[in-house]
Amino acid sequence: MDAILRTEKLCVEYRARGLKLEIKPALKGLTLSVHAGEIFGFLGPNGAGKTTTINVLLGFIPPTSGAAYLFGIDVRQPIARQHIGYLPEMTYYYKFLTAEELLRFYARIFGLPSREADQRIDRLLKLVELETARKRLIKTYSKGMQQRVGIAQALINDPDLLILDEPTSGLDPLGRMKVREIIQRLKQEGKTVFFSSHELGEVETICDRVAIINQGELKVLGPVDELVAQHGVNLEKVFLDIIGYQPQTAL
Amino acid sequence: MNTIWALAGIVIKELYRRKDFYVLFVLTAVLTVATGSVRFFQDPNIVRYIKDLCMFLIWISALLIAITMTARQIPAERENRTIFPLLAKPVTRGQVILGKFLGCWLASGIALAVFYLFFAIITGSREHYWPVLDYLQAFLLQWIMLGIVTAMTLLGSILFAAPSSTVTILFIVAGGILFLGRHLNTVALHNPEPVRSIIYTIYFIIPHLELFDVRERVVNDWGLVSWPACGLATLYAAAYTGLFLLLTWLGFRRKSLT
Image 1 (spheres, one colour):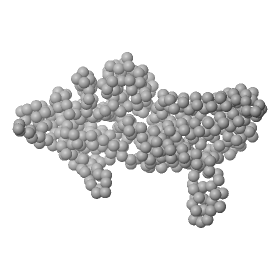
Image 2 (cartoon, rainbow over the protein chains, first blue to last red):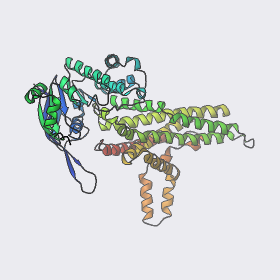
Image 3 (tube, chains in turn orange, yellow):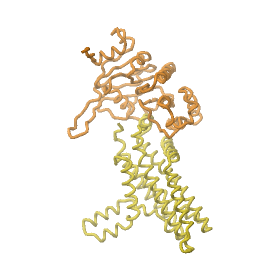
């Protein structure tokens, strides 16, 4: 099966500011691949290197060494991002625009003809249940609504691969459920989803495979059900074991 | 080009959804109308004073709009993190720079056109005389000059830490060039070496924004500047604008976004 997303011995180092010029490795030779049609969970504690990996995949930062490819194209080429959708952890959109204007703006960037863009905007606003609020400025939206605009913008180009950075972070249970439903619907449509999350129950429910990284290194990679069966516990326990969490004994 | 136009459209939308332009326009209008309604010693040449004041206010307001709007574009994208979903699309940093420049320049042009329309109405209603071509030429030259200022501000927004410092520095630089630029060579002549060479170098390096200032001609009805001269001025402005945009791109392409 062809890998839609692939990293090869990916290393990223950050230089600490100051006189010492200290180098801090954020990723240490990360190699993984994500195949078409799967939902891939990318897990790790805070500071493990998840966001750094996503930043490299989206071309925000260059790798120190190694390489990353989307659809076989080096991520440093902007064209590699033609068929992906990206949902950031927090809502980062132009708040002086309405949802409809924002989606039209992104549609223009992808060069969609205006009739097709209109149809897609209608369909997406219906999907994320924002039809009635489409003419309202984004700054008047609740956090859940802003996150749903984010999902709509990530889907405007009908992407084959979705990169979601903690998509349910900060949402209430209803908001989370809606986002989860959308991800599952995307899977049924044959989309590939790569997402990082701290919600391990959610990951266990919807992911086909997961990768767990810690301190920039890949610790485990495999199908969720195999990992759970192998360890005989749920994904949360597997995760805690792999990152070496030692519960404190009661005083 | 689609991406650049799309980005420019967002900048223009931002201009008319913010209050800066309306505040400056109302201020210019109120000051001009108030001055125009006063009768100074029954002076029949009062229209000339109104024109002078109005043109001065238009220049200040246009510079303020262009500089403040441009200075916040890239820093706001980074601070609000809207740059991330944008660059996650097939958009290059060069396109971001060009889109922001085009948007700011067009938005300043729209604001300037509104100011000139107001100017034409006010002076025309007093003089019963409509030198449309003169106004059009003054508008075009000023707009071309704003292209240099916009590109210069975009470069400043990459170099300086905060939009407020970019605004202050660019306003001083643009104002300094407009008021002192044409006199720098004379100043150089009256100074010993090496100060003379330094001032001469500055004189030859800076974009001479004052070349585009035809306020006096409009106020005193001295007629049009020859169109070939305007064409040369446009080429001069295009060269400086291109240079500043290139420097902005060089600074921005490796800049960390995180």
